Amino acid sequence: MSTYGSGNVLSTYSGPNIYTVTQAPAGSTLPPSSHLAALGVDIKSQRAIGFSFGPVTLSGYVDTTNYGLGVEIGLFGISLGNFYGNVKEGLVISIDIRAAKGEVRLYLKGNGVWVKIQLTPIWGGEINADEKLFAL
Image 1: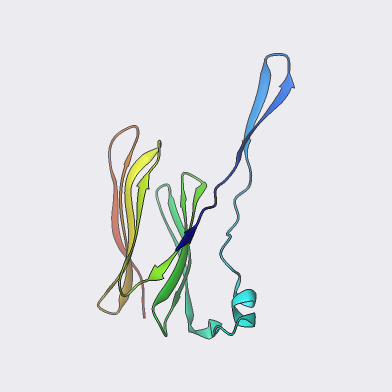
Image 2: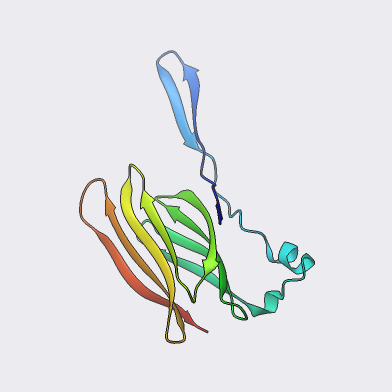
């Protein structure tokens, strides 16, 4: 299950032959801990995810009691959305946008939560990482 969120790109007319293109500020759209607590979720069992590698950013959480996870992925400063799954089973987000193609994978290896990034930007080259985020 996922929800879509993105940084809106806005174009405005500033005058004769002049336009301004801006991007709306990004902000996490994952439910804050206070909302999760109100729903009866034990927020003490959540470990925060905060990771960046090149143009990729991850923010979210892993629930240590049931291995559930929620993560927002940003690429080149634009939110690709929120994604939910189970780190024990692995969560894979395939990316096929104009700027880059590839995938981001969150998974459990031993007692650690890992992220594997494999992306090919439009200008060529590769972005590859396989990093341990933290131990459970």
